[in-house]
Length: 178
Image (cartoon, rainbow, N blue to C red; front, side, top):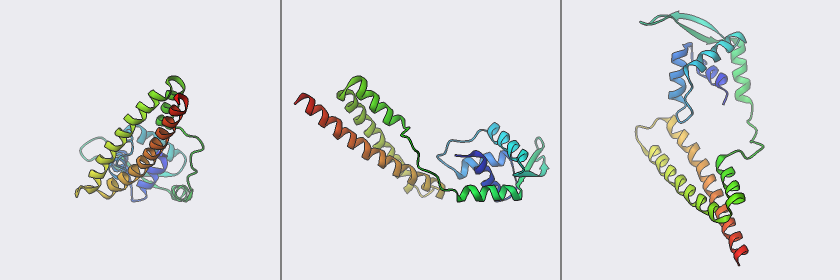
């Protein structure tokens, strides 16, 4: 995720200061790792340096001066280009789940890998139940439902891989002992 592009997208709705951007990020992108205030302000500094945002005014609102920022024409172009760029699928398998299973097979053999896969399958099923409950909550926002859908599809893919790998490890174990 590009924090800079996300902030540009949030600023497309109108000028905001850093505190508002952080709050908007966390509210509109639920289930995404929250962004730190320092990261927001550092990113705004880079965006301003690069001519993608500019100060739109200051307000005090009972506290310290807060500078609001707005997109420049260059920022609008950068945001549009980013949104039009298709994400390439990852070229390598990088998930901790995959790595743990392979290492368990290499180091401990099929028994430990099977035990890990069974435990991991249960953790995924439990998480699926939580996300399904969230989706049916009448108070859930559209962002929360879309985030839950995204997570559910990925968990489902992981579960299919876990079951497939569990079947393979079990079969290999049978062949070795057979």
